[in-house]
Length: 282
Image 1 (cartoon, helix red, strand yellow):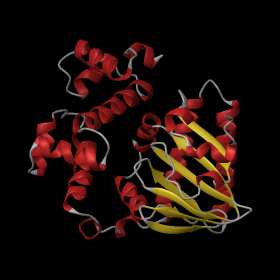
Image 2 (cartoon, rainbow, N blue to C red):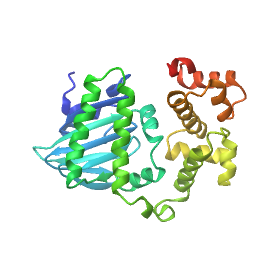
Image 3 (cartoon, rainbow, N blue to C red):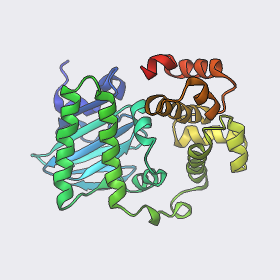
Image 4 (cartoon, one colour):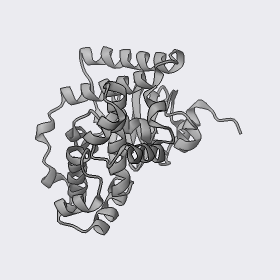
């Protein structure tokens, strides 16, 4: 069976992305009407023409031209209806690239987007949005040598622009979330603060006054990963940043991140990424 462009959002991220970390395209979403969208780890949908009503976690959002939906893979997202002239640009990002993008973003931005997935640019921001779409298409279609870094930086700029234009300080964590979700967000905050020196799940569970088992249960429910997986992901991002942006030796990196020795650091990195420290630095 031939996959039409309008049907492509109906397919799972693994089929859609394959070995790619990012997929771009356009769709009218007609063949997704009434069905939950199967999303990648992070998905952006930008309304280019017409209108659509899309339900996200049982709340309806009206998409008009230039509106942006920021979606996570576990969001229950259903296309309720679309106009005859509806057309959307989509950007689908896999877990590993999304983690790199999120590395330098403010934590409160994730809370904000969880509460308000619909972003509505106005004035000069509209031209910036379409310029960004043109830019990321160009990077994906024509750049090869530095494509990964350019895509990561382009996505970071996109999200940082959102952070610049909204009030993240107005987020009331206790009012908006239940206890389990609050614990998850606090756990993620602790990871960003302590992952350079602490990789033990028990340390974080103790900080939260819960058991490691309970922490494992709630992170799998709300963050789709184990506590150890989330810690390791952040540590690997720290190692990659030091390898690619500093001239520190492997020993200096091991010391900075509290690894016993360079051999342990090398084994840890190879086990998590599949490549050696030297290969990544090159």
